[in-house]
Image (cartoon, rainbow, N blue to C red; front, side):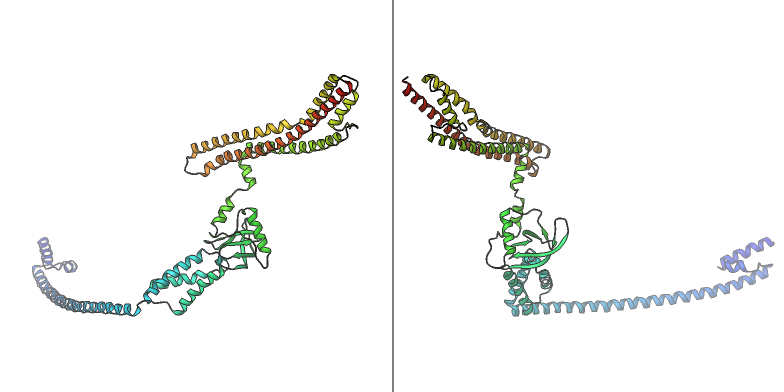
Length: 457
């Protein structure tokens, strides 16, 4: 019975939604007590349900009120949107009307606005590429700000801005006609920065300390050239640097550095010789030897010819220091012999003189023939080098073939340069030797004829 009472109390408590209260309540000990507990639970549950119903109804009214407020706010915003759209359309019409009025009032000033934009942009480009900026830096900053301000707004430029633009343009034109000297930092080849005098020749060239310098437009620095152009241009820079007045011949670069860069790349005579390689060195060596021999032989034969001419004018006194004197001595020593024997003796003497007179002349001729052959050899070697470069690297980069082509051309030029004057030198030396031999033959023939007349046979 007691077990049944416990179970009924538990079921009633769950059914009445008072589980927690039932767990905390004291268990009933009788049916009467259980009935009282059930009644009390109903009362409690009723109060709880009433409270929940009130809360639900209150929440529903709040939701309805929020819904009404949202609909009212939506209506207000829609009305506001319609008013703003109407105002926007009205503003668009006003703006269009004002722009039309502005365009009519501006008239030709609008063209001036476009011209100022174009001129300021062009002038800024000129300043950025002008070497005058090396002496007057920072000129393009105002132009850059001026162009940006005109590009962002439709406001016309002021009179002061137009006058300043005109002043900068006039300054550029005026400075381009001046030779100006100023102090500036120059970057040396070793990277050292040194302040020194720089002379600006208009908008064309910069020179310093007897040589050309270049203005790096991107970095806005003045730097020494890695190599100076030919001597005739460098000499003019020295003269201009030392001049204080008057006129000095000077080579201008109207391309503002491009022609000067090309002149710097032109190889000097020494560099061209080095391009010939070993065949070129051999050709030059042989040419120097041929020139030395030619000078020596021409001088020696000239002295011998002068001695022979003096001896020919004084045949009675034989001088053993010249060939003709030695021939006359043979004649004096053999006057007693017959003419045929005398002729043989004199011919023998002439044959003895001939090797010393013609010595080294044949070597000059050989060099004149060997030099172009060596040039041809260098050409062949250069072409082999060129074809090897083409095989390895293709024909896309001409610089890879430049070494072989230079050797091929330079050796040919060197060979002809040595051969042509060597042929001429051989002609002059050989002519002088033949002239001396001609005098010896003439004088010996005269002696034999005179001896035949005296002896009668």
